[in-house]
Image: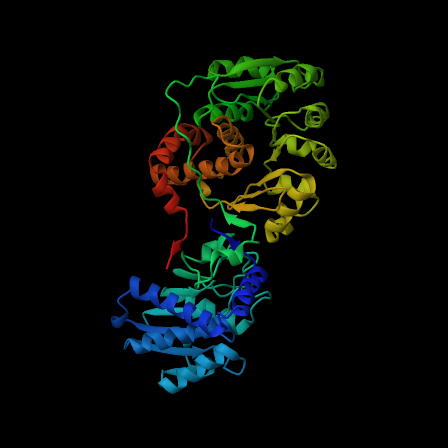
Length: 520
């Protein structure tokens, strides 16, 4: 398990280990050594001029330990104190005293006449200006320093998190260092994983500072690492796997139910049942004759009529999972139908797309459900569900997802560049597979089908939610390797899903390693 912590959680973990005798100066020593090991293993440090930018806190203190280690190896190293040294206390002060006694080259930032010109003397820059606790916009002076650093195109290694990134949210606090590599200390921070912070970190390397796993037992946020599939039995047949029933489509919405159902088949499902309006069924049957269709009565506008309630419930109760909402439209009658289905059906339920909009102001229905429920909103749909602005959700996505899931007892798949999967017990997974190749129309419809397929293959509904997200993202990463990120269509995602599953099964250890953080 790869846990992700808030700033408060990291402080609590450090306090615990300090209280049992792992002193602050040992943690700082371990931090400096971690960065030293990264530099030594990735660069010919004896041939490099290295500049360490030390800020006023413990992040700067870590940089002083690094300077001492490099100096002892006869590396040409210099330290610049970005805001003086008056604020150094305890372990940081001790390392400052050692720096002075060792005679390591140092100066204050105000002594540098032309910082841009000065940087030209160095090959590697270590960013220890601000740590993870930055919670206000940086001042104009530091913003200009960061502009110069980023413009320099030098290799920059950040300690714990690039300076300017909020460790709790990943927000850019006015400006931020664009690191080549980041050495994350203790446990991975939220700001290292969520965007936009993740895009500033470069390659991430993790060092646990010798803090044992048990001290993070209470942390409930984790990286969404892959789960190993059971082998498909050679004598299996379509009845071996769990049965899924899709309900969706409308007069102008043929694509969503098609993508739901076909993605289910393409990612491991064996038997796709789709109830949709008669006009949709007659058209889709020509394109996807592998689907078993249940034509439904239509409203005057050509969408699913509420007259179909009984047949939908009857069929749904005979299956293991229902998926509703794709292409339902915003017409009042099918919107009302979603709410009735959610309140009556007793099997696990995935609600997607227009089905989510039906829940606006009616989320209390979710609390009355006894079977598991998965909601798959993008940020706009989540805004309508919870009544918060998209910007507020972006800033506090982890907390909002966790709170919503716990309040309504649902598995929430909050779709974004870093999709969050939140569970009613407070546990949250952050997915790191995928890329912008997936940011195309129909991609979300495909995700619903992929999640359903994971359940059909034998995973629990809880496992299926996060594994569906992972496989969907992995498919996007393979797409990027094969055809790039531009010009991808939903059909491209569909066609690559079988190869994605094959690659995943045959190369599980490689996949697991790729999506785990590198240790240093």
